Amino acid sequence: MNCGYDQKEIVPENYHLLLSEEDIQKRLEKLGEQITRDFKDKTPILIGVLNGSFIFLADLIRFINTDVEMDFIRISSYGDGRESSGHIKILKPLSADIKDRPVIVVEDIVDSGNSIIFLEHMFSAFGPTELKFVTLLNKPSKNMTPIKLDYIGFNIEDKYVIGYGLDDAQLKRNLRSIYYID
Image (cartoon, rainbow, N blue to C red):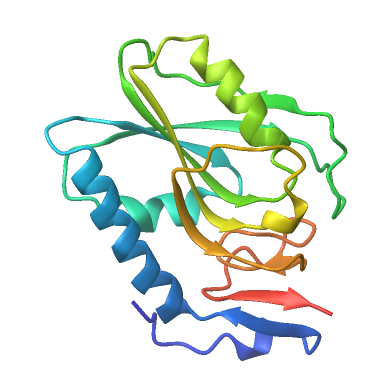
């Protein structure tokens, strides 16, 4: 899936490689196989949590071998900072009707787990037949309460990560690999 051009010139010196593009794509293939098995003969709706999940969702659905629909919701608990404020705001509501539908919520990263708990309560109220959660990255050491994650790409240490949809003040989402900052 390498795009054929080098991104070294846009990767600052204080960024350190955590997960290569190849590692990410291999793991997405496995996640796609799991979701395909679990949702065979169903048409789940995948709900991407913007902005960070859009690249993950776009790549993930290409590894799912059953029909899927998709929609997006945008919430914020960070503002422009690097630490969660703990207060979650809905910036773009869900458009799709998920009543009596299987739903998979797609997150880029889970740290405190507050967003997952918020989304689980909110979406459960709409009456889906199933509600599953997939995240590319999980920081188990930061999870503040027990959370339900059905599919996890990678468990990582508590580091500030950038790339592959994850931003640093809205920049660097376009990096194909994931980096951490000292």
